[in-house]
Image 1 (spheres, one colour):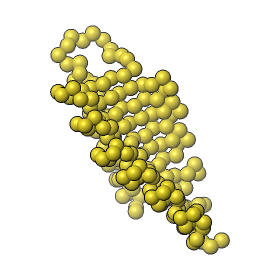
Image 2: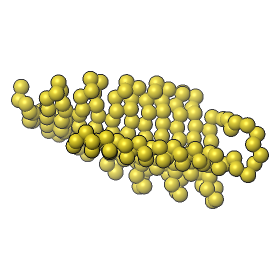
Image 3: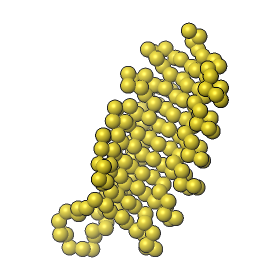
Length: 177
């Protein structure tokens, strides 16, 4: 993948994140429409409900310092969550329609390490993409039991591949050093 393709893909994700942020901001703004302006809207939690009384948006700041904005489907299941931890980690969690399991997590840790994790229908992380503290990228693949089975990384600019059996024993590597 060229640098241009990577930047285009990252730009698409940023536009999607921005669109969600605009939607949340618009929802907050529209809640106050039809009332005389009385000042700032303050509180630690805002819940928006649809015409049937079903919670659809939940925005909050918790005592532990975590802030979040959750979008829920018509069944009341959280499908998308934006969050920021007290330590500064920021992330997006997208859940599947069935069983309310997180299927995609994107984020940047407080240590400035970005990651993307994709999970199966049982919520088990199967694919992780990330960047180490020194800027080197990696990809890991795990089996249905959560055992890491393959890892591809660039270390000191050189590719490294490690493959393990179901018990975690190394079965193949390259380079073979």
